[in-house]
Length: 387
Image 1: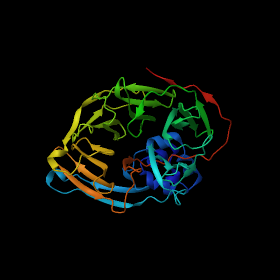
Image 2: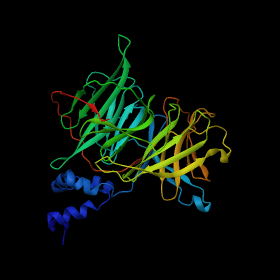
Image 3: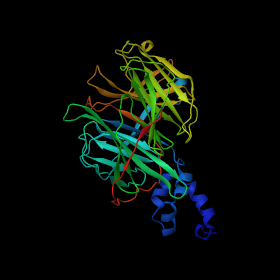
Image 4: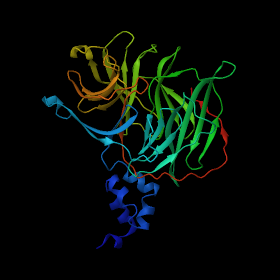
């Protein structure tokens, strides 16, 4: 029996099991498949069928890499392989990428000069350039998330936040939402931003999480719920009122969050990583005991290690970390570390920039479609903070 003669539901079930990258190459085979690969239920079912890939942002370029560390406990040195610089981004000519943000197969890229914002699906090659409501600012931060809908699947949104000093020498916080479906920005009503953000944002189940802090409560977990368009807070597994502490977030198997903490101001070389339970759309979670504790002093390193990003292998109790070697021209380095193991697998030799800290993240391929821009009117909506 030819696949074209199969019942539609059986055909859909078979194709949903095909690795995502292969589907991207098959989408123009026929009109029926072209439509199927844009069906929200099919995309959700297929998501994650292909193995996740590592992305490394370094020296204003994005690279596809793989790190083999599975033999490290058996005295097999880990290794790193570069698949090449990611160049399928159509808007990438002379584009120096300073920040990337991953959400369910889509990458949000902002450039070094804060003049371009591009959404990109590396699996399909689709891109969409996002124009600002008024103008870009140097202090812009962006997060990509979505709202689940039974009828239309995932409706993607972008959160923009910015703090700046106005003409009256007052600090102003701005928040805006961009909706893909309407190709428009909405201003979220002003509210006081009395905290600082100390980590890059991480997306999980459509919402975004950061490590933030204020003088009264110290560091905490801040999140933005794209469905209710509101902020909320959760306690961290450690207590700190030190704004100089290092804190980073990472996603574990698209199910859990992990947080890394270092007390840099006290010149401590101890790093701790803790993991949540599985998180669903209810945004309720608890912290486990610390999964990994590493004292870098036992490895006789020349300076205090200041981790910028990491990926945790919870089962093998090792982490792949990136940072900059401040004693060697701010060169990006990548290494694998455990309680009694430290192995460097990569150091950039082309020169680095103080303003471009490296970022490691897991990219999960998806055939999610980026709709073409369709202009519409802008609206305003209030943004509230959950206590």
